[in-house]
Length: 183
Ligand SMILES: O=C(O)CCC(=O)C(=O)O
Ligand SMILES: [Fe+2]
Image (tube, rainbow, N blue to C red; front, top):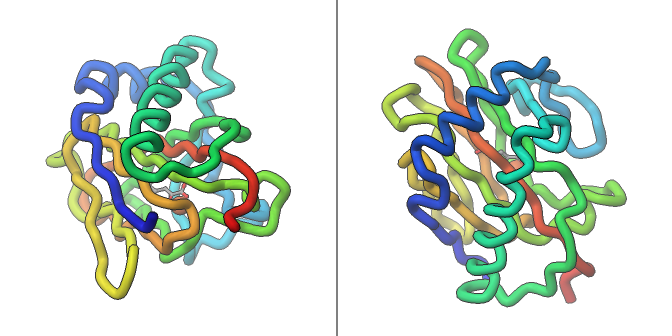
């Protein structure tokens, strides 16, 4: 149930590069948190919502396959939909891009139905220093595999963070699968 699940090669290196190229052409928004407030001490990143990028429609098909496989193999959650757009985040060293400890389940209409989080590493691991995705399934911290194209999945309520990027830039793709509340 509280497993952090890793899927290496979820996207190929070429696919990761293609997503980054598409996103580079879009205007980025300053990252908002659950509840639409901005607090740069908690999160510093630029965001693009892939629903706004027609050329990226194929990405959603892959996401569905990956999440379905992981849910069958590991979680067995009652997942019903992807109610929010996939987001691509950029964490840059110029402002020590990061995301402090948080849970993805929040008060909002959509955020309260998040059950499974998937994060894909879109950047080559040597393109940045810092920028580690860390998840806390229990009293210990599990670091996400930094390999480009690797997907890390975890139950959306688990605390996790992205440590500050101190050199270069890191791109990630995040998607949530939604369903009825845990019981
Ligand atoms: O970029 C990441 O690795 C994690 C992003 C995240 O935790 C979120 O968007 O809620
Ligand atoms: Fe998160």
